[in-house]
Length: 116
Length: 114
Image: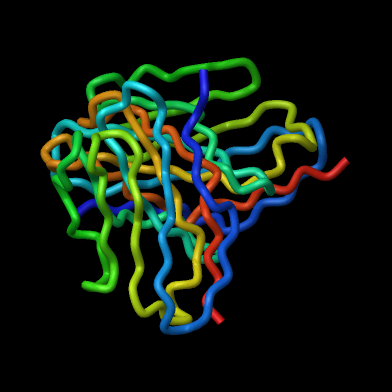
């Protein structure tokens, strides 16, 4: 069965600090997909990134970067020079390709608060 | 283009009543998903449609929950004999084809059962 663990329930930082959100996953599949979503106070889930299990290259998008390591089953997310607008709940999610539905299994989320 | 839309945004009902929640996916997306999110938790899968058919309904908690997508576009989640434990945010998502593609979420329907 697939499982996603986000051990950090809440993180609080001061603006301009760098912050890393951890994500560890479990799956028996060799082909799978990993995602990060942002859920601001408004409630809507906003897609940030999708990676497949065969692509371990790290990715950078502006102040955001992602570190995918299959050896440790981790897909961590770093925000550089955090801003107040980054305050939100962040979810890591896993989708297995052998399932009919490609349903997403989400972690419990990490509440990030960036203080001015 | 337009994203996923859901109506109503909020629904308050009494225990035992019947409710319908609607989802309008992104145009052209064949895959449609329903999730439920309780307070402080991540979304949990309920059901998946590919076209008009429910290809995976293994996440529905019991037979009080049912969903349809008769024309392969709009979907309705139906809950009979609502219970207080059904109170949650119901999220709809769509993707182009399914199979590991990115799912785009709607704003959700916040259901409160009194």
